[in-house]
Length: 382
Image 1 (cartoon, rainbow, N blue to C red):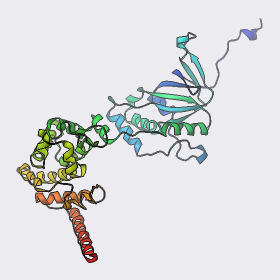
Image 2 (image 1 turned 60 degrees about the horizontal axis):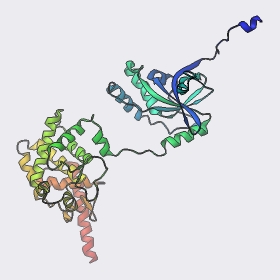
Image 3 (image 1 turned 90 degrees about the vertical axis):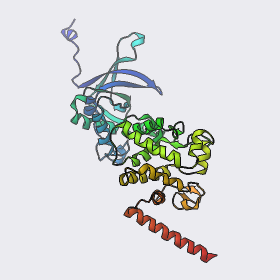
Image 4 (image 1 turned 180 degrees about the vertical axis):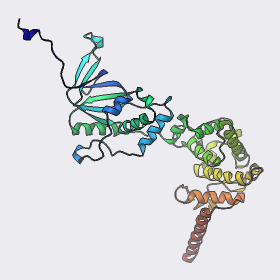
């Protein structure tokens, strides 16, 4: 036997990354799932270049404003965060080495990736960039791991198709679900606590769908309540959930006694849906107008605000009331765009004898002028 045949087989001189992975099959192609340290992601899945020739682009343009938000989330909730896996393509010759030859271990092994191979992010470029920013501020995150799904693909055409398939059918959660499920925002905690304590709200708040279904006993949405409570407590937050919820509960307690048919609804004499069909105070534009007005009322008359708030019961809250036309209503339909929220709030403030701000007064004057012109034109046509 020649000496040449006795020489050991030398490893390749080309640098290779070796990743423990699980192997799977989709559409007849192999793909791999790895648990990668965040430091690995920063190093090997870099932020894409800002300027690429059009024929090389495989992703949507980076939205840089998203990156610090994700980084802040990682840093702030370093002990309670969650990130979905990143999806990447490897353009290069890889080798999969099973853990053993036993059948049950054929899908577990080591993926050997030449360092010369290109790794292209198909989904998760903002997460990758944010991870780098987060590690700069909190280096102890570097050994945390994140799932990365690797597909073995060559060329731009396939990568573009993958991006289209991954992002072509997104379903964005509505604000109600976000408010219901997210336990971190302080205001959401106050709102949920308030709902449990108010008879006017209990079992009458839609927590999931984006709007209340016709015929449903739920006539408020949690997102509308969240916005209203934010306006009610503006500059008044104590950062004590129970105390702030107590404040909101007092607000709803007064409304229960003075808004039309609310006490009958709470006692079960009339259906909640009948209230919503007849009156517009359950809608977001009215709730926000009430909350913002009461915020001013509390600041100006802290000792008498609950008694003074009873005055809103004198308003005609029926949707058919012509006084709301042009303010909360347009041709008989509720409308929330433009100056309608301000005009709605102005009418509530008038009843509470609250002074309008300069902006509110400007909008009010313009509305009255337009109404006068419109009335004169109508009379001239007759």
